[in-house]
Each structure stands twice: as C-alpha cells, then as structure tokens.
Length: 187
Image (cartoon, rainbow, N blue to C red; front, side):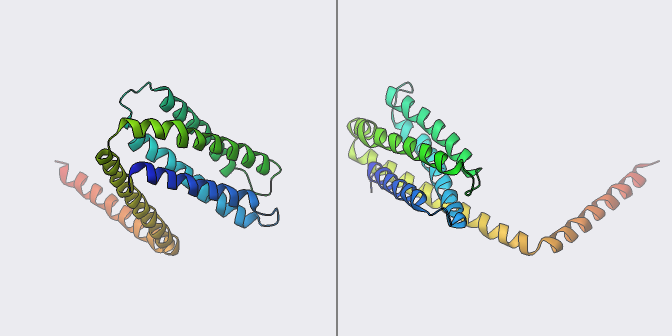
C-alpha cells in the first residue's frame, strides 16, 4: 500500500479508538484506562511516523501545512500526556478526553484534506509506494520493540528477586576484583 493509504488507514483507526474511549461508561474505569493507554500509544506512533517519514517528503521545511500539522502534533501530544496522567474516575477526565478528541479530529481533517493532497501532488507513485514500504517496515520494528519490552518486563517482574540476588553477587565480585587489583598494584 502506498504511504497515503497507510496514513488514511491510521487516521480511521485513531478515530475508532477515540470513539471507543468516549463511549466507555463511568463505571468501567479499568476499561477506560486500557483504552486511554492504547490511544496514548497510537497517538505517539502517529506523530513519530509522520514527522520521521511523511513530513520530510515536503522539501520545504517551512511549508505552511507541515508547520501547522507539526504544531497540532505538539498540542495533541501534550493533551494526550495530560489525559494519560488523569485517573479515569477523576472529574477532569471527561473534559480532557473531549478536548483531546476535538483536537485530534481537527488535526486529522487537516491532514486528510490539504496536507495529503499536497503530498499526493508532490510525489510520484513510485515514491509513494516506497514511502509506504518504509512506513510498514517502521511499524513492524516498533511492534517488535513493544513485544520485546512486554516480554522483558514480564520476565523481570517474575524473576525480580533472583535478578537482584544475581546483581548483588556480581557487584560483590566486582568489588573483590577491584580490591585485588589495588593490592597487586601496590609496590
């Protein structure tokens, strides 16, 4: 798939996730927390992908559309961080979610319309396909990294006492080695 198709697909997924977040009941704080975590992660990936791979395709760094979209990214990131730090049962949660959802939708409208149209006019089909392959490759790498972190975190949590003991032994052995080197170094 070309880059524009992937980005539009990503936008639809973000919109669906926003709707799910907005539709959670006040009783399901745990579900809300999971959805907000997913939204926070999805928005972070959205910003990173576009700013790393998509926006550089505009050869003019001061291009007005890119500047506006980048500023929207900053605001969305800030709002998403604030929402993620807000307990789902807090009074501020719903208003923060509403503000974030409005800003994300406004941003997606900006990108879906003029920004992606300008990119489509700027790049040929082969370049769009290449950019799409790069986006897909990046998504595979990010997914693998997240899987590794999840696996490692689970391993570390389960084996924390053993790991602490092993680190203590290693620290002791390192200290003994330093003392022995110092003794050998004395004339």
